Each structure stands twice: as structure tokens, then as C-alpha cells.
Length: 145
Image 1 (cartoon, one colour):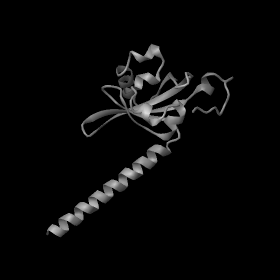
Image 2 (cartoon, helix red, strand yellow):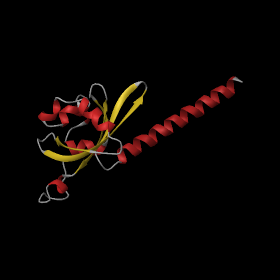
Image 3 (cartoon, rainbow, N blue to C red):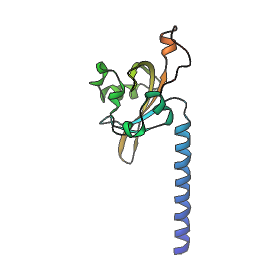
Image 4 (cartoon, rainbow, N blue to C red):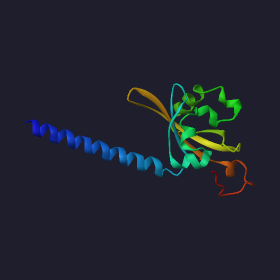
């Protein structure tokens, strides 16, 4: 009986690890910048590879930043209410500007969703560069980082 219980537990642990690996691979494969932040404080807790190049920060820097620091000063005083409002728009997106490490203001559409994991509320934000749409004379295919 004990052997069977250990076998089931080991199988469950392996399934969990496989699912976590699939999640990480999928998360990093998303072509748009993705940031996950604590919904109450705005502290950035996770990001994908594209977010690093888009915003121009290294992982160490993002890990100590607040979501608000990615936005121009006129928006910075609004989080976390600003992000809660974004997440409550079902199926919608909010257009705003973000600020890269190099000081560039970029027009973005931000799609946000709230979720809870391990008793913590998080906000998941996908940032899409809409600069070309907002300013057709801007260069296409620009990259950051």
C-alpha cells in the first residue's frame, strides 16, 4: 500500500513539473511583451523574454521595479487602480504610452487580466506596440533593446 502511494505521488510530481515547463515555454513564446505584477502593490513578479528587449531592462532590474515605473509620470500616480481598471475591461484593451529604459515613449495597447494563484492576486499584461498605427510616419519594424 505504501509503495502505491509513493508511486502516485511521484507521478503527480512529474506531471506538475511537466506542466510548469510547458507553461514557461508557452509564456516565453508569446511574441508580445508580457508582464505579471502583484495586483495590490504593482510589483513586477514575472516577465517574458520579449518584455526584456522591448522595455530595455535586464531581469535583475525588472525584478525590483513597480509596474508604474513602465509608464510616463502622468500615469504613475494611478496604479494599482489604473491596472485594476484595465483588467476589468472584459475582452478589451487600453491604449496608453509606456516608457522604455532608454527614455522612449511608445504607444501601446495593453490587454490585462486578473488571476489568483497561491492566494495572491496578480495582473497579467500583454503590451502591443501600436506606434505605427498611431503615427503612420514612424519607422516600421523598429526594435528596442
